[in-house]
Amino acid sequence: MALFIALSIGCLMAVLSGRLLTSVYASIGLIAVIAFVSYAKMKWMSVAPNVVDLYFLAFDPGTLQFLSGSFLPYLIVFAGLLLSTLVAVLILRRRETGSARIRLRALALFPLAVAAAVLSQPRDFKGVEDLMRYRYVTSFFSSLRNLGHLGEEVPLLAHLEAETEGATPSSALCHVNGQAPDLMVVQSESVVLPTQVLGDDTPAELVRGFGGMDGRSRALRVETFAGYTWVTTAGFNTSLPISDLGWLKNYSNFVLEGRVENALARSLKRCGYRTVYVTPLPYSFVNEGAFGRSIGFDTVIDQAMLEAPSAHQSDAFYYDKVLETLSRLRAEDDGPLFLFVLTMSAHSPWDYPLANVTQYVALDSPASIGEKRNLAVSRC
Image (cartoon, rainbow, N blue to C red; front, side, top):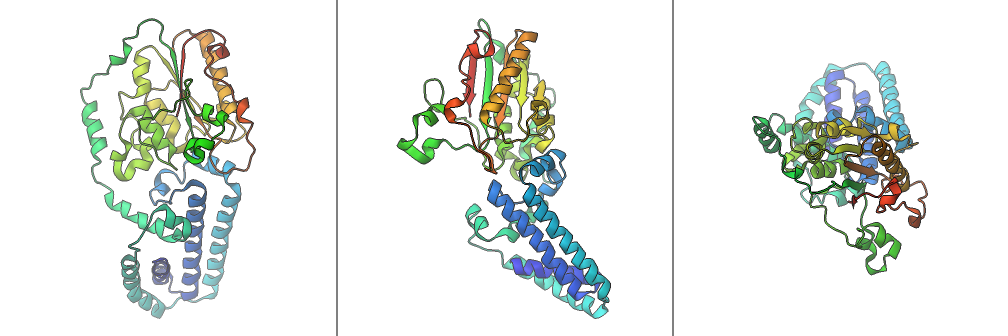
């Protein structure tokens, strides 16, 4: 399939230019760039590249900032491949004369090459396992089928639009006896419970780090997605089945912005809570900041506001920043707080040392924020 895809691209370029060698080099260069991007994305994020990424993610400033800060060597290789291909094509184009015969032959071969690429799609595709081995080129082109969904109605979005018309905000959560507790949720990026891997051999300090004050781990009760953590975040904060977005699932932060009325943060705001979203990434990364504001977060604290040298700091760094935020907000107002916190220490690349796990800040101590107050903490 990959060879027929390369042939199809070469034929198309030959039809446009009438130059054989130029088209061959351009086709090989483009395939090399796509293969490299596919390989790097699968290696570090376990996610196949999707053609729709080009619309939602490729030119997002927060995404580019994240990539440049975390995967700069790979960006340099990508730029090198792109530049060398462009230079080779320009040199060959100047030396090679266009030919009508080349155009006619390429035009005749092009539909056959496309048909062969379609017919040669693998029937035994095994998802991530195959992509991690050798199917780096075909994954991107297979995603072109998503373009066939353009214009289709997405049932979940249609449902939300219908619900919004004439809807009245829910106030069911506001029946609180006594002083409302502060609420905090910590979502750790790409974390797998150590007990899932080590079983009974898991060190006690690791067990304590992934459970509640009673030592138990509890289900998040929301769909989780490796490689697209923001989809899990959206599911938790909206209580929506994100899989019902279908082919737009991975772009939930974009398509749900401004569409969700009774999200968790917005509901808590109606109950007098101040709501804060803490992310280790830039505000615009996958539209996280704007989406967070649209579902009821008063404040979004991003990488710049955290003064983080990079997105990959230890959990203790983020916890310290959260405690500072708690102290500052508590000095301003005694009302209850809801904080949603993301951490990134477990996300690739893993080229930095972690602090000893026993040195982590204990968030289950109300005294740590300067006064005795109920603090409900859930680590997801």
